[in-house]
Length: 233
Image (cartoon, rainbow, N blue to C red):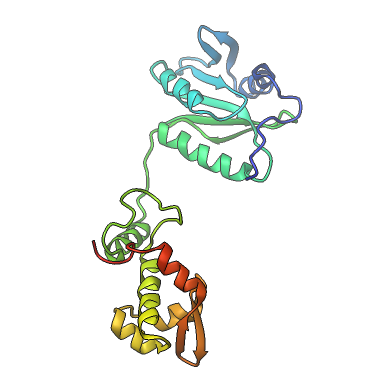
Protein backbone atom coordinates (compact mmCIF):
# COMPACT_ATOMS: atom_id res chain seq x y z
CA UNK A 1 0.00 0.00 0.00
CA UNK A 2 1.35 3.42 -0.92
CA UNK A 3 2.18 5.70 1.99
CA UNK A 4 2.07 9.45 2.25
CA UNK A 5 5.54 10.96 2.25
CA UNK A 6 5.93 13.41 5.11
CA UNK A 7 9.33 14.86 4.37
CA UNK A 8 9.12 17.71 1.88
CA UNK A 9 12.24 18.95 0.10
CA UNK A 10 14.50 20.82 2.49
CA UNK A 11 12.68 19.64 5.63
CA UNK A 12 14.52 16.74 7.17
CA UNK A 13 14.82 18.28 10.65
CA UNK A 14 12.22 19.71 13.02
CA UNK A 15 14.21 22.94 13.15
CA UNK A 16 13.51 23.43 9.42
CA UNK A 17 9.88 24.08 10.33
CA UNK A 18 10.72 26.92 12.66
CA UNK A 19 11.60 29.81 10.27
CA UNK A 20 8.40 29.68 8.14
CA UNK A 21 6.17 29.28 11.22
CA UNK A 22 7.96 32.09 13.06
CA UNK A 23 7.53 34.39 10.04
CA UNK A 24 3.87 33.37 9.72
CA UNK A 25 3.10 34.25 13.34
CA UNK A 26 5.13 37.45 13.28
CA UNK A 27 3.07 38.70 10.35
CA UNK A 28 0.07 38.43 12.66
CA UNK A 29 1.69 40.56 15.32
CA UNK A 30 3.08 37.86 17.60
CA UNK A 31 6.39 37.90 19.42
CA UNK A 32 7.85 34.45 18.70
CA UNK A 33 10.58 32.46 20.46
CA UNK A 34 11.76 28.89 20.02
CA UNK A 35 12.54 26.24 22.64
CA UNK A 36 10.94 27.96 25.60
CA UNK A 37 11.09 25.42 28.41
CA UNK A 38 9.71 22.19 27.00
CA UNK A 39 7.72 23.99 24.28
CA UNK A 40 9.07 24.00 20.70
CA UNK A 41 7.57 27.40 19.76
CA UNK A 42 5.86 29.99 21.94
CA UNK A 43 4.21 33.15 20.67
CA UNK A 44 2.62 36.01 22.60
CA UNK A 45 0.52 39.00 21.57
CA UNK A 46 -0.62 41.67 24.04
CA UNK A 47 -2.66 40.13 26.87
CA UNK A 48 -3.87 37.13 24.84
CA UNK A 49 -3.16 33.55 25.96
CA UNK A 50 0.14 32.28 24.55
CA UNK A 51 0.21 30.23 21.35
CA UNK A 52 2.16 26.98 21.74
CA UNK A 53 3.36 24.93 18.77
CA UNK A 54 4.80 21.40 18.86
CA UNK A 55 6.99 20.44 15.89
CA UNK A 56 7.42 16.99 14.41
CA UNK A 57 8.43 15.58 11.03
CA UNK A 58 5.33 13.38 10.81
CA UNK A 59 2.02 12.71 12.51
CA UNK A 60 2.35 10.32 15.44
CA UNK A 61 0.49 9.34 18.58
CA UNK A 62 3.27 10.77 20.74
CA UNK A 63 2.87 14.13 18.98
CA UNK A 64 -0.82 14.25 19.89
CA UNK A 65 -0.03 13.16 23.47
CA UNK A 66 2.50 15.96 23.76
CA UNK A 67 0.14 18.58 22.34
CA UNK A 68 -2.74 17.51 24.59
CA UNK A 69 -0.45 17.87 27.61
CA UNK A 70 0.27 21.47 26.53
CA UNK A 71 -3.47 22.27 26.86
CA UNK A 72 -2.82 22.47 30.61
CA UNK A 73 -0.78 25.61 29.85
CA UNK A 74 -2.86 27.28 27.12
CA UNK A 75 -5.97 26.68 25.06
CA UNK A 76 -4.08 27.76 21.92
CA UNK A 77 -1.99 24.69 21.08
CA UNK A 78 -0.98 23.68 17.54
CA UNK A 79 0.88 20.74 16.10
CA UNK A 80 3.04 21.43 13.06
CA UNK A 81 4.39 18.96 10.49
CA UNK A 82 5.68 19.13 6.91
CA UNK A 83 2.76 19.00 4.50
CA UNK A 84 2.37 15.34 3.44
CA UNK A 85 2.85 14.43 -0.21
CA UNK A 86 2.09 11.30 -2.18
CA UNK A 87 -1.01 9.28 -2.98
CA UNK A 88 -2.38 9.14 0.57
CA UNK A 89 -1.57 12.74 1.52
CA UNK A 90 -5.13 13.99 1.14
CA UNK A 91 -6.47 11.32 3.46
CA UNK A 92 -3.66 11.84 6.00
CA UNK A 93 -4.46 15.56 6.16
CA UNK A 94 -8.20 14.98 6.40
CA UNK A 95 -7.99 12.33 9.12
CA UNK A 96 -5.46 14.20 11.25
CA UNK A 97 -7.34 17.48 10.88
CA UNK A 98 -10.46 15.72 12.18
CA UNK A 99 -8.47 14.33 15.11
CA UNK A 100 -7.08 17.78 15.94
CA UNK A 101 -10.59 19.23 15.96
CA UNK A 102 -11.80 16.48 18.26
CA UNK A 103 -8.93 17.11 20.68
CA UNK A 104 -9.28 20.90 20.56
CA UNK A 105 -5.90 21.36 18.85
CA UNK A 106 -4.83 23.44 15.89
CA UNK A 107 -2.89 22.11 12.90
CA UNK A 108 -0.14 23.80 10.89
CA UNK A 109 1.25 22.31 7.67
CA UNK A 110 4.48 23.59 6.13
CA UNK A 111 5.16 22.94 2.44
CA UNK A 112 8.63 22.48 1.00
CA UNK A 113 8.58 26.02 -0.39
CA UNK A 114 7.94 27.42 3.09
CA UNK A 115 4.23 28.07 2.56
CA UNK A 116 2.26 27.73 5.80
CA UNK A 117 -1.28 26.34 5.83
CA UNK A 118 -3.61 26.13 8.84
CA UNK A 119 -6.39 23.56 8.25
CA UNK A 120 -7.87 24.14 11.70
CA UNK A 121 -7.43 26.36 14.77
CA UNK A 122 -7.79 25.26 18.40
CA UNK A 123 -11.29 25.30 19.78
CA UNK A 124 -13.93 23.25 21.59
CA UNK A 125 -15.15 20.21 19.68
CA UNK A 126 -18.83 20.30 18.74
CA UNK A 127 -19.61 17.21 16.63
CA UNK A 128 -22.61 17.19 14.33
CA UNK A 129 -24.54 13.93 14.47
CA UNK A 130 -25.57 12.37 11.16
CA UNK A 131 -29.10 11.03 11.52
CA UNK A 132 -28.82 9.45 8.08
CA UNK A 133 -25.68 7.50 8.98
CA UNK A 134 -27.16 6.50 12.32
CA UNK A 135 -30.29 5.09 10.68
CA UNK A 136 -28.21 3.24 8.07
CA UNK A 137 -26.20 1.60 10.86
CA UNK A 138 -29.35 0.67 12.79
CA UNK A 139 -30.87 -0.91 9.68
CA UNK A 140 -27.73 -3.00 9.18
CA UNK A 141 -27.89 -4.02 12.85
CA UNK A 142 -31.51 -5.15 12.51
CA UNK A 143 -30.88 -7.04 9.26
CA UNK A 144 -27.83 -8.90 10.55
CA UNK A 145 -28.81 -12.34 11.85
CA UNK A 146 -27.13 -13.48 15.02
CA UNK A 147 -23.70 -12.12 15.92
CA UNK A 148 -21.44 -13.56 13.19
CA UNK A 149 -18.58 -11.13 13.78
CA UNK A 150 -18.33 -11.61 17.54
CA UNK A 151 -14.70 -12.70 17.31
CA UNK A 152 -13.73 -10.01 14.81
CA UNK A 153 -13.33 -10.48 11.07
CA UNK A 154 -13.01 -14.05 9.83
CA UNK A 155 -10.09 -14.88 7.57
CA UNK A 156 -12.47 -14.26 4.66
CA UNK A 157 -13.72 -10.87 5.90
CA UNK A 158 -16.59 -9.25 7.77
CA UNK A 159 -20.07 -10.80 7.55
CA UNK A 160 -22.64 -8.22 6.43
CA UNK A 161 -26.41 -8.48 6.20
CA UNK A 162 -26.09 -8.39 2.40
CA UNK A 163 -23.68 -11.34 2.46
CA UNK A 164 -26.05 -13.24 4.75
CA UNK A 165 -28.86 -12.69 2.22
CA UNK A 166 -26.60 -13.94 -0.57
CA UNK A 167 -25.71 -17.02 1.48
CA UNK A 168 -29.41 -17.78 2.07
CA UNK A 169 -30.05 -17.61 -1.66
CA UNK A 170 -26.98 -19.75 -2.39
CA UNK A 171 -28.05 -22.36 0.18
CA UNK A 172 -31.48 -22.57 -1.39
CA UNK A 173 -30.02 -23.13 -4.86
CA UNK A 174 -27.58 -25.72 -3.49
CA UNK A 175 -30.49 -27.70 -2.08
CA UNK A 176 -33.14 -27.19 -4.78
CA UNK A 177 -31.12 -26.57 -7.93
CA UNK A 178 -31.95 -23.87 -10.52
CA UNK A 179 -34.88 -21.80 -9.28
CA UNK A 180 -36.93 -18.74 -10.16
CA UNK A 181 -36.01 -15.60 -8.28
CA UNK A 182 -39.53 -15.35 -6.85
CA UNK A 183 -39.27 -18.88 -5.46
CA UNK A 184 -35.94 -18.11 -3.84
CA UNK A 185 -37.36 -14.90 -2.33
CA UNK A 186 -40.37 -16.71 -0.88
CA UNK A 187 -38.33 -19.57 0.56
CA UNK A 188 -35.51 -17.48 2.04
CA UNK A 189 -37.45 -14.34 3.03
CA UNK A 190 -34.91 -12.32 1.05
CA UNK A 191 -37.22 -9.83 -0.64
CA UNK A 192 -34.62 -8.68 -3.16
CA UNK A 193 -33.40 -12.17 -4.06
CA UNK A 194 -33.91 -11.79 -7.82
CA UNK A 195 -31.97 -8.53 -8.03
CA UNK A 196 -29.31 -9.83 -5.65
CA UNK A 197 -28.66 -12.84 -7.88
CA UNK A 198 -28.77 -10.72 -11.04
CA UNK A 199 -26.24 -8.23 -9.70
CA UNK A 200 -24.14 -11.20 -8.55
CA UNK A 201 -21.74 -9.14 -6.45
CA UNK A 202 -19.81 -12.17 -5.18
CA UNK A 203 -19.94 -14.23 -8.38
CA UNK A 204 -21.99 -16.93 -6.67
CA UNK A 205 -24.86 -17.16 -9.17
CA UNK A 206 -25.34 -18.01 -12.83
CA UNK A 207 -28.40 -17.12 -14.89
CA UNK A 208 -29.90 -20.17 -16.61
CA UNK A 209 -32.58 -18.16 -18.38
CA UNK A 210 -34.62 -15.07 -17.69
CA UNK A 211 -35.52 -15.00 -13.99
CA UNK A 212 -33.96 -18.41 -13.23
CA UNK A 213 -30.61 -18.83 -11.47
CA UNK A 214 -28.33 -21.63 -10.34
CA UNK A 215 -25.37 -21.83 -7.98
CA UNK A 216 -21.94 -21.23 -9.52
CA UNK A 217 -18.78 -23.11 -8.46
CA UNK A 218 -17.72 -19.95 -6.62
CA UNK A 219 -21.04 -20.01 -4.78
CA UNK A 220 -20.48 -23.58 -3.66
CA UNK A 221 -17.08 -22.55 -2.31
CA UNK A 222 -18.65 -19.54 -0.65
CA UNK A 223 -21.05 -21.77 1.26
CA UNK A 224 -18.07 -23.73 2.59
CA UNK A 225 -16.06 -20.67 3.58
CA UNK A 226 -18.95 -18.85 5.21
CA UNK A 227 -20.55 -21.82 7.00
CA UNK A 228 -22.38 -20.86 10.22
CA UNK A 229 -22.05 -17.16 9.45
CA UNK A 230 -25.55 -16.58 8.10
CA UNK A 231 -27.91 -18.57 10.29
CA UNK A 232 -29.34 -17.26 13.57
CA UNK A 233 -27.18 -18.21 16.55
